Length: 411
Image (cartoon, rainbow, N blue to C red; front, side):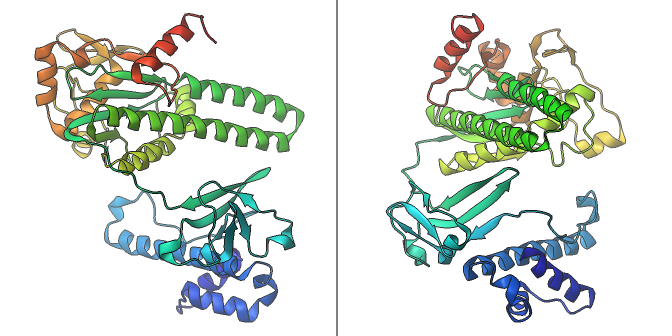
């Protein structure tokens, strides 16, 4: 259905007679009844709408590229045809909810059983907007299985009492999945280790190699799905814990280091390249962002160029990326070995904490770090290390659990 819609939109575009999704939908109903009737009408119509949305996005990007080509790595590509199974989206006019069970229209013809949900007990077909709890339902193909995603309107609780002058900055990485720094002098930096994600990837790579040797491609797809689910679950725990930490400390702003296109052309060594691109950091950032915004926390995505090289404790200037490309910058400090940064005064600081502190400096300036240095606390101290996040536990409890595990007392 999506490919048929796209075909008509592409052909109309190539003949300088562009059509929109609504017009394409009418053509399909008239000329391809056999294809259109394979899906319930609500699902078929929603499919053409989504193709239309992607087409409009391309047209908009194409026009923007003509005006500002410097913003793009390459010209936006015209939407292409999909291969294999595609995500199927049903709007609220394509299902009903009875006693907590979602009944999709036309599902019986495909042997599709009602699906249990806990977010809503009852919702009629095509519910009014002010009566709607569940919105879109997405059936997403995952190789050997399908995932059903249920979009719903969440009840908003009273926002927590936050102090907008309190800021946490996050540096996302590999060995340390997240390095956290606060502008509050009594808050020790925190390193959330990346061991959990690395162990998931190591096990996946071992299993994949063994299965590939035996030629079991279907089993590999199952392992891909399992890896995706485990990483997704752990990222939810980490993001929930970080936002809970903001609420606990009444922190009103989160600054997260992120570079546009940071995984394209990355060159940090062959092994690190493989690790970095295998960890879906953007997914973690998205989870942190939407959960923080639900709590009324302001989220700033900060370009982290050169934050790992400039010396935070020396209050060294952080070069602008575009200017640094013209003239190679020099730095007062440097990374002396894995995980350790040495300042101009030969003071040592964890390298990822240094990066996190610089991300903070780019947003709120240097005064906070000067206060830390005068107080002799905060970023100067040895950071608190957490090897495994439990979303139910406090910062101190997570650290105690990590220490217990590392000492071999608990598995």
